[in-house]
Figure 1 (spheres, protein in one colour):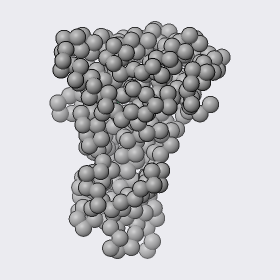
Figure 2: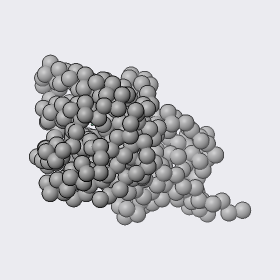
Figure 3: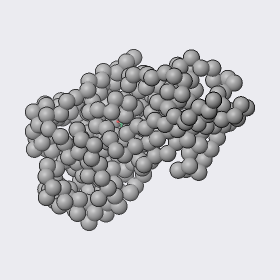
Length: 325
Ligand code: MEV
């Protein structure tokens, strides 16, 4: 009998507010980007083939045994282990991964690819883990990529819904959030790329040098995130926009913005966005701008492009509508 291939997908993400401070135990809010996705397909192979990961986007293919420390190798192995399938000898499967999500842009590309792999490999094993179990497996590959991840990226990608997240010693606090109104964002790409561990490391160095100043900044972010949750729950987008601007000011003080991010956030606010901030690790990658209606969205998108954004996405949470425009 021929076993058919098994395909699974996972979304990109945006951090609405609270990035960086979340690494130090402060709350943060994250959103899935439903229709920018990573895909993994498990295809059974002939006996003796071994377990191979194929990543055509980056022109790479490898046997698990050849790259034991690769983040995707690790995620396959921990998934097989959790599903009760021996990793040695490895199963005879090819796992093909592709992604529409720009890498190192603050959109959770690594977490999305790993989540798609966990879902596909688990399904191939006949196992259908819940979101918390998937997030815990992907966290192990995030640790390989980022060193000290808070766990927010793998969690929002696995839950695929807006979440309130707090890092804890053992199990994080995760609360799915129901938005009072759909939120519409223009997501502007600076075109710059920076692996998350770099700005995270810079914040850690700053915090070690001057713990009092950094603790005050993290506390300011925590206040902003709590106020943002209250605004979300009543659908007050004007208040939320102001809080995003406040968050951007603290992120700038933390040293994780960049001239391009500053330019795009300023352009968005000057064009009429309710608020704008970088999203994710910073030092490049993407920013988000909160808007309400089509006229505002068109003006902000045009301003972002004029300020140098090579890509602008128009996305609404609560509906599956993300389009490159
Ligand atoms: C990255 O999406 C969010 C950061 O706070 C890092 C982390 O939480 O692990 C910058």
